[in-house]
Every structure is written in C-alpha cells, then in structure tokens.
Length: 142
Image 1 (cartoon, rainbow, N blue to C red):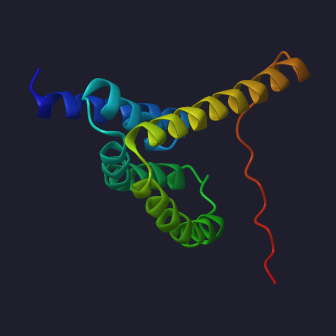
Image 2 (tube, rainbow, N blue to C red):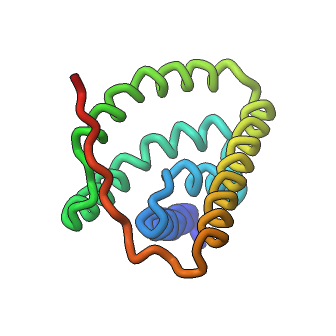
C-alpha cells in the first residue's frame, strides 16, 4: 500500500470512528500517524489539527441536520479554545518528542479511564441503555 493510500484509509477509518463516537480526530489521527506511519509526535499533532478541519465541518453539519448541535455553546467553546490551542502549541513545540509522546499517552489513558468509569456507572444505574440523546437546554448568558 502506498503512503497516500495508507493515509486515505486511515482518514476514512478515523472519520467513521469520529462520526460514530464523536471523538476528536486527534485521539484517532495522532496514534495512527505515529504508530502506523512513523511520524514524530509533534508532526502528528500538527497534521491532526489541520486534518480535523474538514472532519469537524462535515460531522457538525450532519449532527446539525439531526438537530443535535447547540450552536451558541459551540461558538463560545470554539472561540475560547483558540487561546488554549495557541498556548498548547507553544508548550508542545518546547517539549522533546519523547516528553510529548508520554504526555499524550497519559492523556489517552485518562480519557479511557473517564469513559470506562462513565460507562460502568451507567451500566450499574440501569441495565437498559437510555433511549437516545436528549438535548440539554442552552445556558442563559447574562
């Protein structure tokens, strides 16, 4: 398989997983780029940030059609996260590749634990899965 074909296959798989579970592309793209394609951690993270743009647009549009997106909340979070991503990128470029790999690994383990805990708590609370997502009301901003 050529490099471009492998990247395209990873993109399709990441897109399916992102659409199915609503996870950020970085959780899929970064490990795939580092482990499968052998990219350095910082290069994988930077590539993931650029690659997630079309994924986020397509996924949000599809979820919007289902009436699930809270655009006001998304806009506030999106604008606020710009400062965070700039600070995070600054820190990432100051770390060694090994330190960045370890930090990303710790982050992935923390996400896995949180998701597992939530799933276990839900399972314990009820043997039946909920009927579907219920939209949360938009918070009032003064």
